[in-house]
Amino acid sequence: MSMGTVEFPTEGNTVNELIQKADITMYEAKKSGKNRIAKYTAGIDMHSERRLDMEKNMRDATLENYKEFEIYYQPIVDTERPGTPCAGAEALVRWNSKLGFISPAEFIPLAEYLGLIGPIGNFVLAEACKACKKWNDAGKMFEVNVNLSVVQLLQPDIVDVVKAAIEESGIDPANLTLEVTESLAINDLDRTKAILMNIKRLGVHLALDDFGTGYSS
Image (cartoon, rainbow, N blue to C red; front, side, top):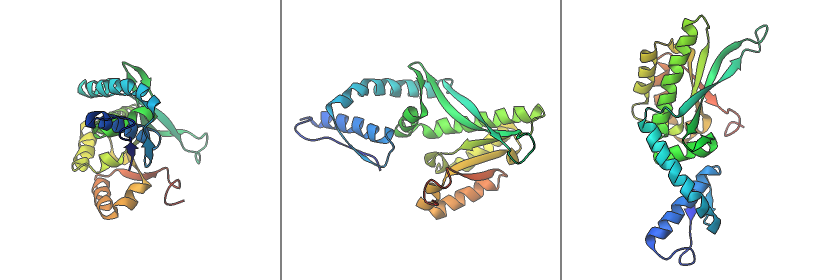
């Protein structure tokens, strides 16, 4: 839970002004790590104009076939094989917007706030599958790892989304690994298990992201 608080009447005396300032403060709480309460301060307003610009640009970017979102591939090496060869890569999304290069720490909370993290994540999944298929066709037996956000994984059609990405790209499902955070499994175990088992039946691999940093530690 992320919350932004503002005091009446010292920091605003109309409903619209108070809601706007609380909204801005809530975004700051999300941006600084989520699961916290942020208190409104006067200086926080200086970021509101940039935030509004980012909102508009992100909406425009998603309507323009996500062309501003770039996928970087972080190599995964096999340390047990001689020469520690590259065995695949993890897909990481970056936003090269009209406002400049915006870090994931800044744009991912915004995407979640705007309800766009699902569509953006689906785009990344589809593009990563296509890239992996090209590597495989070129003789590189690489695999690709893709992160699934909590919001994305709990989409009612997530199994169909994964299936479509596999079929449209032609990737071998065994070369796709979907990473989820361990905290998701704790929050709603029964629902999560059912979704993950349906995804696993497609032939893809599943992995816990950041294992050991949360409940399991």
